[in-house]
Image (cartoon, rainbow, N blue to C red; front, side, top):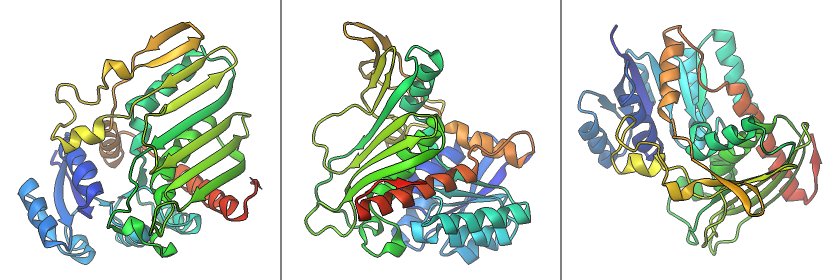
Length: 347
């Protein structure tokens, strides 16, 4: 069987670092076309994938014979381009965040369902090594009843960067909380289910900043668990990536998943050491001095596009239900309301 032909809309960090390398390394898939209007990126794309057509806009891409497309453009265009693909009957992968608003996401999901067109969302951090380890620890039962889940996505970026994510126009859906909240909120929902109450503090702290760069969100899940989530550009020292507090034990995990820097360094799925974190980043599980080291699971970003391939060939399901990404957007919107009004919001 011939490889399924993928068209990638966008060749910034998303297209160049994540989607194109992962598609290219997946058996049965091929990078067939890339859209970028930037001459330097176009030259880079052609060099990286000589067999691909590099075209300047979405219309040129949709004129090609493709089996699916990937939308990895600025946030404001996600829904518009996904709808164009659906109108043409082309299955589509949308990068996170799914859309700018829950209403936009809902319209895309409704259109895909009505047209019977495949749709999924690139929630790759469900396949992070540290998150897979958290799942393993929960499934082990060693924590007992879980009381609180803590998740931090920390960076040190005290000066705003020059890109669309720093634009203050709400239509851009920029800012740190849209960028990283799409991951940390999604992970909390995946672990502990629907949310009944939300409290958030979302601030602009950088001099000259137009969008948020520091966020804290507290979620009360219907299951009884409380999730405390942080995303900041102001973390100059190392904090735990995850902490799970249970009635029998606590699990603490430092260190970030290594797959993103590995791709940037030229590694690909299947290469020696792919997705493997340093042993020093192993988490600790227990109480007081009675603790055990928990080896970190191997990251598996390659699973995403393998599942996309299987869904397109009728042998499996798409990796992410877009309804779950829609629910995460609803929580993000409620968190923004909470931050604006300084109150707990009940869903």
